[in-house]
Every structure is written in structure tokens, then in C-alpha cells.
Image (cartoon, rainbow over all chains, first blue to last red; front, top):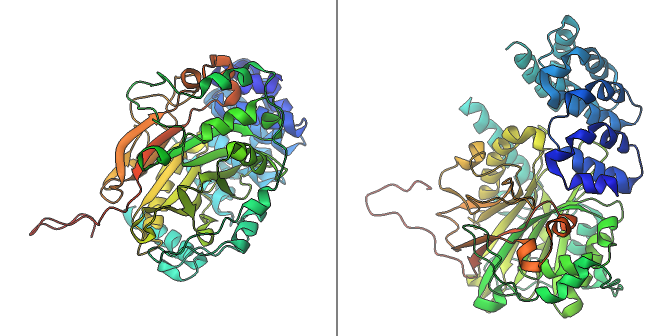
Length: 143
Length: 377
């Protein structure tokens, strides 16, 4: 199985970041291995960022979660897509996706007014983790 | 900042104490909702272990494991290699010592405790021909194995694996934690242990509460005791099983420092806390956890992943408290010990087991030199 093979490759599986993210929406047997591969592959290649930004808007929460995570790992290279993450932070119904969007905005040092406002609002959330992550990301965007 | 951390530590301790049966000296309640259904089954049938009381535990897992079929053997290169791997040979990784026996403490009277991240340990993995047998062989090298990354919606994976471990007459048991994770992809921790050499306290099984949600997969804790003819003198210890989130390692290892201190205070009569697992960090990346007074990590200067380019896994404790540690530790090299190719070893896991050896007798508490204050009192 391809996802299992890629999970054995560590950071060398980064070239398949998009395919693995898409596989999160597959059957349990495949998505489990895809997640294992995604956990270890590190930052995605810049050539995948455009596709990951599209997948971040997937209706499948696990696909969205991992696309958002990889955009964050890409750092400032993915900052061009910060509005996608702002929308997810404000509107996603999945708290894990919201938290990852806040985390990723910090990692990519998102500096747009919309990003700052969304993070400031999230930092006031009663959800303890979302609030903490957003506050830390705000600090990162100011560096 | 230090005051803030201290407050957090206190909060964690209070919550931990709160779910314990009797505050600081109590056991964790077995029926709290954070504990999975298998745990409840264990704890319903087990008897409490009271340190020093001499009560032995019942074999609570035998009914749960049942007489399940042991699956197919052979047929794959992995299975074929197993037969020739009964006697571990020159399997040392630099700086590490290999287990000397295939039956843990039965060989030299000491306990071999291991941590093993078995990547995506689920139905698809254990269904591979020969895989259960290979994993069972590895588990039987140790008395107690803390396993990370059980990923299965069904509850049969670990019972099936333990049945295979016991297919040679061994008497291993297990406890397993709840499914954990922020996304809908969840993992479980489990402990698999040789009931001939170690026993667990069913009322001590639990998941550390994490009200600030600092840890992606909160540690799974259980208290164990070496099985000896004199239980009052036997080595007792907490095990704290952890798999950190690779995206938040610095934050999580700092939070684990608080967890460690909470566990040190969980029982007034227990000073031994062994924190082990996939930390996604080398010994140089342990943050505040590594800076706790007297903290000792066994795995150092070697890699622990199967591809042999990263150090992720470790076994940690406070050296002055856990003087039962013999100084022997190792990384169990799947390729060299089992005669596998790198590709075959990667099918088992992307991590290698790490292990450390402990004496079965409780070491007396450290005494302070006259006229000098103790660091730990």
C-alpha cells in the first residue's frame, strides 16, 4: 500500500504531501497510514502549497486539518494563502481545524489585518487551547 | 513566569489528586470516564495492590483475552526470518547493550522495561502474515513494554497480539488507554507485561488530566510492582507513557516536566516515576523536562528510529529516586537481532524499541550526608 510505504520514508515522503493529505479522506486503513506519514514528513515542498491551500477548504475535517498543518510547516512561503486560514479560524466547525489554523498563521508569520484581527479575536476565546495558540501566533506575527 | 508554571504544576497535581481515590496517597479511580472500556473490564475484576501489603494481583486479563486463534504463520520473508532470530546475536547499536535473555528478568533477576512506538499498530498491521509473531517475539524480550501508536477502531488488536505473545506458554497481560487525539485520527497507549515478573495495580490505571490541553495525547499512567517472593520489598514504580506531537515538541516536553512532578507527588509512598515513550526529541531537546533536578535519560548518543538517523525515544526518571536502575540500557535493533532487511524492519515500525534494566528490589531512600541539606527533601 502506497500510504504505508510513504509512512516508512520519514521526511523523504514530503514530495507526496498532497497525495497523503488527500488520502486522509480515504478508508480507515489508508487514512491511518497517511496520517502516520504526514506526522513525520516535515515541511512540504513549495510546489505543493497551492494544492494544499485548496485542500485546506475540504469538507473532510481530517483532510482540512492536515492541509492546514502542512501550510503552517511551510512557514512564510505559504503566507500568500493566509486568508484561507483566516476563514477557517473564524468559520470552521471543527475545533481541531480552528486551532491548527491559528497555529499555522503564526508559523507563516501572517501579517495581514484580517489575520491579526482573527487571531486577536481567537485569543479571547473561552477555549483554552485556541486562546493560547492564537496568542502565541500573534506574538510570532509581530516578529 | 516561574510562578505561573508553579501554579500550573499545582493545578495539575490537584486535578490528578482529585481523580485519585484518596488524594495524595490514593489510587486513580478506575471508573472515571477518561478510561477506555477495556480498562474498565480489567479493573472490575482485579484486586488492589497496596504497596508493601503483600497482596498479589489476580490474573484479570485471562478472561478478556479468551482462546482466540493465533493467526497464520510463515509465508512472508518477515515470518521466515523469525525462526532464525531466537538467539539475539551481535545486535548492539553504538553505546547500547542488548538484552541478555529472551525472557527478561527470568534470566538475571532484573526487570527489563521497554518503550516501543509500533507505527500504526492496527488491524492491517497485525493481519500481515508473520507480523503478530514477530511483534510477540520482540515483546517477549522484555518484562514490561510501553507501546505507542495503537490505531484501531476495533478493540481486538491488542488482545490478539497478547494471545500470540502467550502462544508459547508465556503469561503476558496488558492494559490499554482510551483513544486520544485532537483530530478524528486517534491513538491509544498500552502496556504489555509479563505477569510472571511484574504486576500492575488495576486501580492505578489512568490518563493524566490536561485541563489546559497542552498535550495532544495525554500520558497514560499505571503503577507496577516487580513480582517477587517478598512484595513488601519489591520495586514499585509509576509508568508514564507518552507520544508527543511532532509539531509541538518544545511545548509538550515542557508540559511533561509538570506531569512528571505531578506523578512524583501522586502517592506519598512512591518515589519512582519512569516516563518513557516517543518524545520526538533527542536527549538534547528535552526542554524543562530534561532540566528537572536529577533527571536522568537512559538513551543518549544513539539513534532510535529504524532509518537510524533520528533520536526520538527515551526512558527517563530521577536518578537519585530510581536507584533501582542498573545502568544497562539499549536500543533493540530489529535488523540485526531479527535478521531483517531495512525494508522489512520498516514494515514492523519506523521506531526501534528502547529499553532499560531495573533491579526488582526497592532501593532504600537516599540519605543526606550529615550537615548537608538534601536537594530532594
